[in-house]
Amino acid sequence: MNQVPAGTPWSPTSWRQMTAAQQPVYDDPPALDQVVQKLTSLPPLVTSWEIDKLRLQLAEAAEGRAFLLQGGDCSESLDDCGTESIVRNLKVLMQMSLILAFSSMKRVIRVGRFAGQYAKPRSSDTETRDGVTLPVYRGDIVNRSGFNPTDRRADPELLLRGYERAALTLNFIRALCSGGFADLHHPENWELGIMSETQDSPQFQRYGEMVRRIGDSLRFMEAVQGLAISQLNSVDVFTSHEGLHLIYEQAQTRPVPRRTGYFNLSTHLPWIGERTRQLDGAHVEYFRGIKNPIGVKVGASMQGDELLRLMDVLHPDNEPGRLTLIHRFGADKIGAALPRLIEAVQRSGKTVLWCCDPMHGNTISTADGVKTRNYDTIVREITEAFAIHRGAGSILGGIHLELTGDNVTECVGGARGLTATDLGRAYKSVVDPRLNHEQAMEIAFLVADQLAAAQ
Image 1 (cartoon, rainbow, N blue to C red):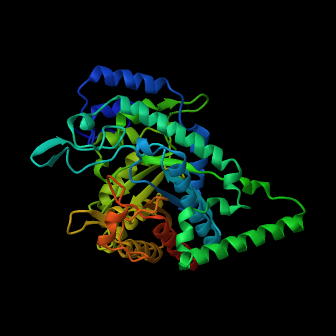
Image 2: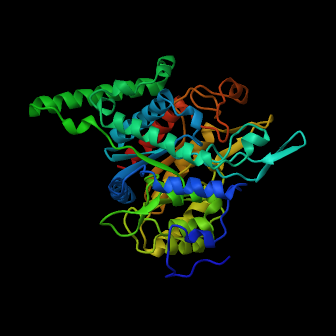
């Protein structure tokens, strides 16, 4: 199908006129319609003023006055929506943001890949094991990972379960971030139990010294002023997920009183994936009409002219904070691919927020067929990204990571020197490998050093 002509009216359902990639096939359309009607009537998960607040902060990051930290699970599990899992992932974001803010002296925008990251793009519609072929697992909002016909059936009720888990997650995070958990006077609240296992690591020692220095500075300032700095008792944490499952996104897209246009109220920052950014596709059509700030994953196949056309559709008014380009090339391709995209954006005269995703272009498989990522390769892509942007007079204003607060062994390398043999000890992801807590902290210090060097 052709791209929607400029000026064509948009609605939350106009995407249905286009070819929609990566969508599940439901065998009971009436049941799906009932679920969508229910989702449409349920309360929004986020608010328009939260969305606008994030957009303004992203505009600052695009100008180099703030930095975006976007991280979390590759794919959330409905079964893992529990206190411990939520707290651990939030603690990692808090610790990393503290490191980045202290080193760069910039606002750090915390955006979690949670409360909606339940759908995943896949390279094939089916999976075959021992001669049996079933629909591929597309995330817990669609079907289940168990390899049997019941689990792999696309179940409309899972859309409601995903909404409910997202609401529970957001409610808990909001309560934590507005209360004592987020108080910068007590960063010890963010420590993970596994940190006691790594007290001899350089990262742990450096982080501990940083916390002590921040505490001393706060106490000094409060002593001089004679009052507490109450603004440091809470923080903002925004949500993001890939806006992949368009029926789910449509159901939570609605107008807001005394505002123009439509907001996707299932998340603050939805993004379009590398597999679904076709100009004539349903995802671009849907995203062009929502008022949220949006992200687009761009890979090595993206050409400069294609990016210009995409910006014409998604970023026509050059609205500050509207568009984040999340580049994901792979360490071996970034040197050739990134400069041409930077040049295209500069030629357009438009402002975007550049964000580096060093994870997705560097996925490999071991000899046993286990998906993993090499820490050293991730570091190389991050380092080259900063250098290329600096050399082009551009600003790298964010980092996008798949990570977890759990002590997993899914990515090789890092300070502990994990190898392919170690992956079997604690490999929990059912889709993509994630950085564990220690590896994430190492990345935070690497990015912090890059930001400090640019001051």
